[in-house]
Length: 270
Image (cartoon, rainbow, N blue to C red):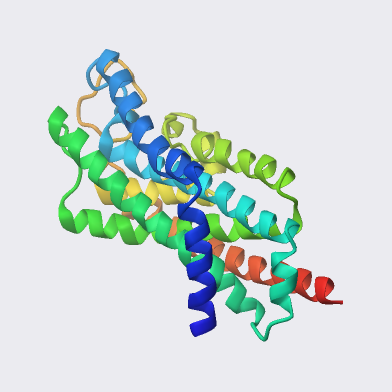
């Protein structure tokens, strides 16, 4: 475990020295919350609940994790390009120890993201009178977002392992776009029928949906002329199905990342 912690400390030190971390992973999600609040100020009252804090914050978290995926892919690919990993491969460390050494610092950054976004959402929600979520609800939202954090970091490490530092960010940018579009982060997928059903099979939307169940977010009204008796996101609807698939994606992505890294490690040694 000492080797893992030393390697994780090295990676964390490299990460916090990179200004892109603060711009993309911390500053950008906060800026987006502010931008959507400005947009909401010009929208008709009650017609765009997808921009309310209870609905927006889970989506912003998922989008922030996708940026963290890009950073993790870039970090791992640069280590490979510099032959740093090849030198470490001659050490007695096991593949899973390398994975943990990368996973831990990126998860720490992701946890900081969750906390900062929740606090920002609470501030904006309180200032506007729309409210956000109680402290117990915030803790539950924190726990609910952890599997998606692991999914994104695992995928980032996998892309960084098999791609170079130029192509890995390009691939990750696809996931950045997907988290916002098919994740329903700021799009009313609940009015799109079959397309929402398709998105429900993907972890982006599952994480956002479950997060909105925790916050008690309002569905976008199908009849945009009225907001009488708004329908809330509830776990009883699709929660069990989404949660099962969501956790399955986490296990699959973590296992796939370990498998790819192990194969690459063996090929580099040979």
